[in-house]
Length: 399
Image 1 (cartoon, rainbow, N blue to C red):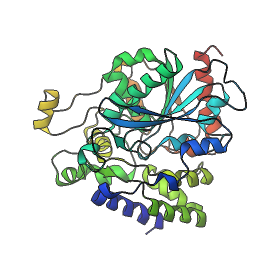
Image 2 (image 1 turned 90 degrees about the vertical axis):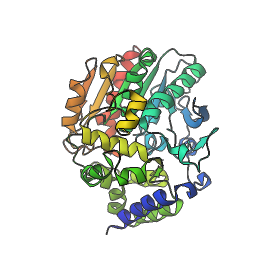
Image 3 (image 1 turned 180 degrees about the horizontal axis):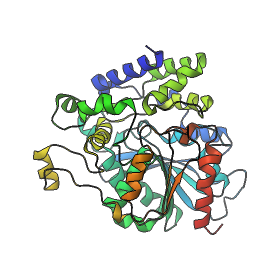
Image 4 (image 1 turned 135 degrees about the vertical axis):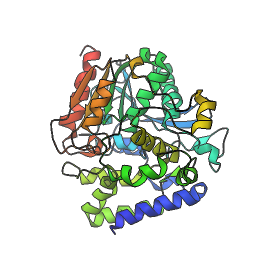
């Protein structure tokens, strides 16, 4: 078996069995703020406490040292990572290609979010990390609680009335959840930019769906009961060291660490970017996040978490969980998708577009081989994705 697959399977098993004993030593990794400073950019670290006690870390690039624009107006933008990820995904390709740096150099005040449960947001003022209650959340709570808390904090700190938003993968899902469940936040979004948008999964081709969907995609099954409310694929310093060494030995090993989940090859991938990601990925998440995505694959719906008929009636007042109402999303929203996405592919993006009456733009990357992870690690992502994003954001600022 491929060494990287062995390493990730070991990480998964260890995380499920001993999640409360996971050792997260941030002093042994290069954190987002250190990575930003290493390229000469100013950086700040902020903490936001949610209404249910989670302490979220936000990294900020307030201005560009190249522009020396600290005394000029700098509209804020929030970048939000995907599942198993963290803020480093927006930095991994360096200042010439990564969206965070490019936005700073375009005159924006860049904020990098970290959802509850990842390596930068592992505290709760009310609940111990060692309690299963800590992991009793999924991306619904990230969308309805975490992202609104980040936005409130950023707008209060900067004095702006609106914010731009960009998310990748799960970072797109939580945007859709927030604006459909808390529609008052539509007024606070100046523009939204969703990379590899994920809401429907009927046509997903990744092996993850067929391998795990039947086991955990339906509530009440033994695997579902075993996996719920625990940490999934935690960051592990030993495993990451082994994988990092594998990356130095072989680029194909490093590539497969990520492609095994996203599928679809790595013709566009930058091996150096993946080397950087390996240092802090996988970043930790709740098992409920993965279960919820698999439920969407099985139900063919974009809806809330399915707890089974009894609990659904207690929580929702009906047998099945309610759908997210995409018609409530009226903030200017742009989709950026690709043809070779094995998780959130073109046919499922079509379904999203059909159910999104107020969508501003449906942009398809004009390269057939571009896949789910290429939005954050591709050699050609600047020209194909990041430059178009900045061009669109500039129009909202009259630039």
